[in-house]
Image (tube, rainbow, N blue to C red; front, side):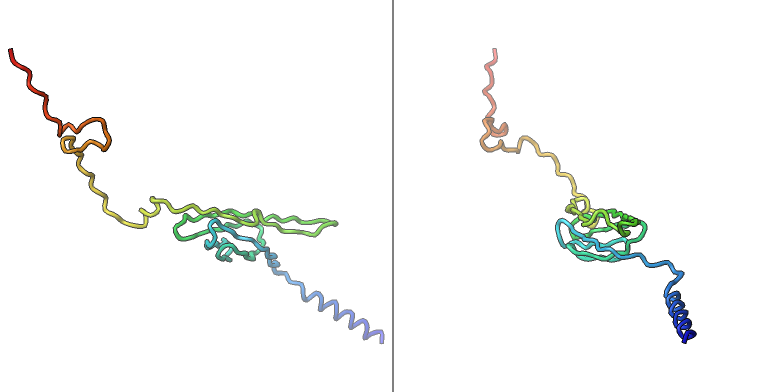
Length: 159
């Protein structure tokens, strides 16, 4: 009976060892809240996951930080850097991983006229010829008469 017990204990300990692997463990995932002003932007992380704001994605808590790029039609794209902070823990507290900032918020600026000009090709406008003062009318309510409509002064008598 004693031999059976020793074999069973040895088998259980070997089975436990076989579950350990020499491969690098996959990092844990963390939830990141993604928001934008205005809402509805497409947010994509440099690690792959993305969604339409406001939303939340799970990303691997890798050793290095990552970025989140926001894009919305008629707005300039914005990229926000995100840091991953690992706390190793000690005897009184477990290890933890935090994301900074969380939530990741981007304020998108409307695309300006320069951005529109880059997307469309337009012929340059020809400058208008300068207007002559003879045909110009005086502005409404002006105390000065239009010089083109004023009669010339009478000629001075000659001596």
